[in-house]
Image (cartoon, chains in turn orange, cyan):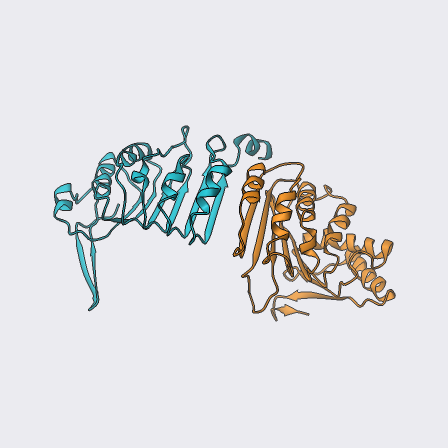
Length: 218
Length: 193
């Protein structure tokens, strides 16, 4: 980390369009220079899309500019943090993203994919709530895999109930990309309550599922 | 290394593809390279199986002014290859691409100050993986056409100080891609596995 910060403090890269940082296992991420570097790069001043993937060995976030064409990934910042378990990944990612929060203000689309198989019981809803607060202007949230739905929907529901629309006031679309799986029981109920609460505060929220047959959200 | 002593293929009226392959079965010795015309040589090494392969490889590398591309990825005999390669302290004036991928070993391979004679002015792409090159600055001062620089899997104990590498980067006006990666600390790997 110190090495990276030393390098970044010594270089100027006005033409940079893609950057990939990989951090090793550590508890505290105090990264002011990385934050300063990202915020002062014209290319990285404003991100519009974020994709966060939680694997069993690491968490990876990819931040992208506005999508002009399909699969337009010209301006990309990718951060990988090698650590586990999931609560540690969440905490580490929040710390790193917090160091360049200004660049996240225009984030409209957020994708969350939890691929860890052993996350059960190791993470509190409140930790997800705190994490989601980073994406205050997100209009579209996509949850990939049913694990992501199990983890994030209760946090969103709790937020909507406790603090009305304070946390994700711009949220309009919730996409569930769960490969044919659809929530049932308490989880389905939680999604229903989330929609109702948003409507009570004059915020319409559409929930759509990915349909494998038609290959589109329904 | 591939089999076949010599192949000449006319692809079209504008291009003649001349290849010289070295192999265990049909060896090409240094005499053949002596009569080999001064055409650019591409060296691609993977799956060397004997010390004789190293000898053949070195025969080709000693034609240092003709070598334009080197791609080496081979676990076996890497120590003996490196020992002989670094002993060629002549500049590789035609070299445009150099890829050296070394696997994990007890000892970290180290490239000396005299590597490539300290000069490779045509170099556009440099990939070093698992190798320490503390005096890389000297070579980089000659590589003003460098477009890609990748120093990957650098052992922590052999890192290049930022204050040393950054001034070198500023002398590379064509540089488009920079990769710096450190070897994952073994102690941490044990903790997390």
